[in-house]
Length: 392
Image (cartoon, rainbow, N blue to C red):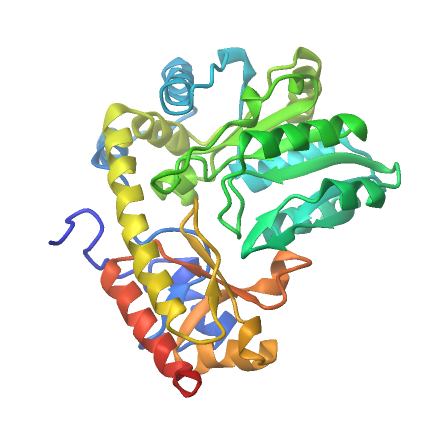
């Protein structure tokens, strides 16, 4: 049975699409038959409500400054309450140019040059980039790999702290490992931040993309942390509208909010009208129904991909609880990173993200984007089996 929302293959070459148009230059995977499974955007159109909002804008034909944002903020408040059980005040919402920009603004507003910023690695590579570019030190606290899943290792991390650390950036759900952190784990993060007097930035951009059987808990629902907590969320990953470069930094504490507001004003940051209109349309009952269909479809892709990986000796796919990003461990092959990567790229003609870019612990991994039509996932599975056929 086909799914009309997600099964159609939509050609993306020649559309200024980083994922497909830059694949050959960056990975040496030929455009003629290559499969782009690296950068985290989806090969699906957004909900019809989003497309309709954009078409309404273009039909009007005037693209001036955005004025009244009350409907936009009301949509965010509605979404967080109905989908996540999290009550957000209108005054708490700041709109940034995506969450990489949001992270950079938090680093700028709440830390000083030379401060240490803690990351639980391996983790989203853009965090490393903006922290280092700001003249702060990345403090890598490796996640423990236990029974094929990442766990937090607070005892080891406590021993790492030197006193120069002032911030921790949490990825929840976790990218690239796909973990949905439990309430107990999040409480542990809160306690860790209080012990070491750290501002906690919780990037929850994948919070809507949770597999069946798992439930995401917003860090804002953890008690006793609001005076040091910065929440970050966006429509961009959920609805595949990353090109709008819109995200939200949500701050409940008035003092933290005032500090962040002053940096936003000093840097002259204002919102993109296209992003605001599209986000308002996405955070709607129509958008919610679309997300429910999407997560079911992604779960089907996950099952297909994991079954194929399980048939290749030496390869292990970490259980995917959230996101659409499969994190595959190649260490069991006994191959060097260069060899298994070459097999994937040169033989299978698949472009994945390289594990070391995510920091300590990523050395033997590749990350595969499964948010693509199922027929493409099926082709990728067949090619991977062929590329490692000598192991079977």
